Length: 332
Image (cartoon, rainbow, N blue to C red; front, side):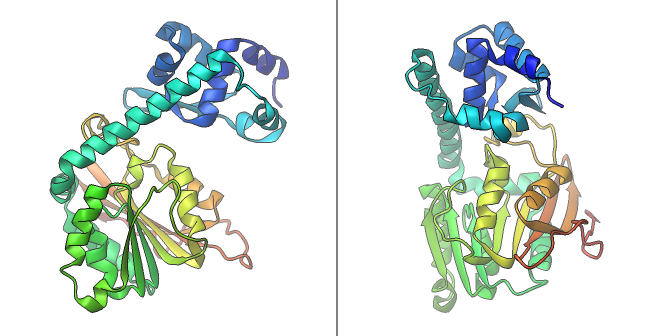
């Protein structure tokens, strides 16, 4: 049962109401909120604590950063509807907040874009510093070849390595990336494929938050070391699932949750890996049954391979989302 009095007290302060409207638009760090609100960190932290105690915010700690997102009270139900209908466009303070929120978005985008532009030619070698690519690719191939690939969507193709590995076995392969520099490298690799294989590949500039493809268009969707760049990874997963045909498979290769802060500051990672619990919840919430998960351990980082299968409208939602036969753990 919600404490209505605490909620109303929390929302009665203008600054806290501004924070609520901001985090409903974008998950923000405490430092970013300080920047947007132009207030001291102790004062902003006090407002955050009151909203947290009222159950209106959720905190997510990653290394030395704390990110804030709206709780279920702000995203579902009557309170969410009330906030969605509120017209705050004429409030001068909120107009300034929105401009500064755009500055935060632009700063994040610029940091990632600068990294990709500076390291486009080195991307394959940088991946090898985290874990041996050969081990990951062998496991990914084994998981994918458990069924026909059919129509494949490679999200965040980078230099086109997934195209090299799987285009021959796909009936069609669409490779998407938001970086023109990366797509130029991917196209260079495709040029080395046979004409028969290359004719099946389509390269597109696009954002994983809004994929430039239709609903139910693919049998296999692959994220290879891409999801950790997403500000809202569950929304990105939901968008990928939209593109899957019934019975289609989503395969995500990424790091297990870790605390190597330098991957955020040096390599522009938005998320420091993912837990099995996060991935299972994200899959289940959007109509996927978890059918495989593997851990590949090497050095300070663990690479995970998760695969989910899209549940058709006729299938009941499973109660157990792990297929024991496929729940394989490999230690390198």
